Amino acid sequence: MLPLVSPSVVLLLIWSIVPLVMTLWFSFQRYNLLDPTVTGFAGIDNYDFLVTDPDFWTSLVNTLVLVGSVLAITVVGGTLLAVLYDQPFLGKGIARVLAISPFFVMPTVSALIWKNLMLHPIYGIAGILWHAAGLQPVDWFANYPMWSVIIIVSWEWLPFALLILLTAVQSLDHSQIEAARLDGANAIQQFFYITLPHLGRAISVVIMIETIFLLSIFAEIFVTTAGGPGNATTNLAFLIYSRALLQFDVGGASAGGVVAIILANIVAFFLVRAIGKRLDI
Image 1: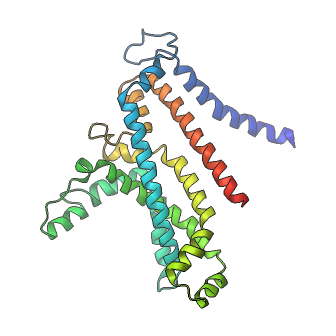
Image 2: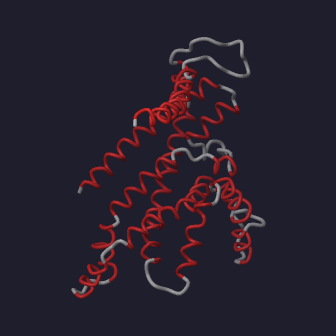
């Protein structure tokens, strides 16, 4: 069995380790594409420059705000929608397909849809509605850039949360609901004392998976705000991109990449432990 599996394992290790090792190597080098004559071992200078740069801490805060806000919206919204879509109503099958569809739209396309079709102050749907109400249209990406990105990303990931949580709701033993109803529990009490505890594990899985992916959000920011205005929507992934491909500082960008990997692994470690304990209950 080992001779059959070993080629795949070796290939997977090479695929994973080589880019990581190269990133780690460049993070200790002076490597700027604008001045190729400056080379050599930089020590921890790239890391020192990174952590003393105010943009780094701003991008870190923006990353946490983006991840936390999207998680709150998708978990709460996904839970409520899962309970709603579990109820019988006309056209439920079509409604489910439409609700899940945004998850299969590419991030770049989603960003373009919201930038040009939904939130544009002149010919977007939001602008048209504002005009119809006699109000001054709002330039969302200029006045509320972070909230605009949060809306886009939440729209993309809400179907994922709905899909996982709806599956969990459908696995609930409805005899418990019936027993609670006979005991006089109203709909709100049934939700908080029966449905929500049953969804605990599914919510934990949603939080873990979404957090890992949300830490690397890039396309939505690149297409809509380009990290601005200023650095209002610059997250850690966009900061690394700007260092590498806008400032041509490969060493500094590699240091940012290493820091991002460390932070992502710390988050993943605690999430996996927390979810593992919940699954053991």
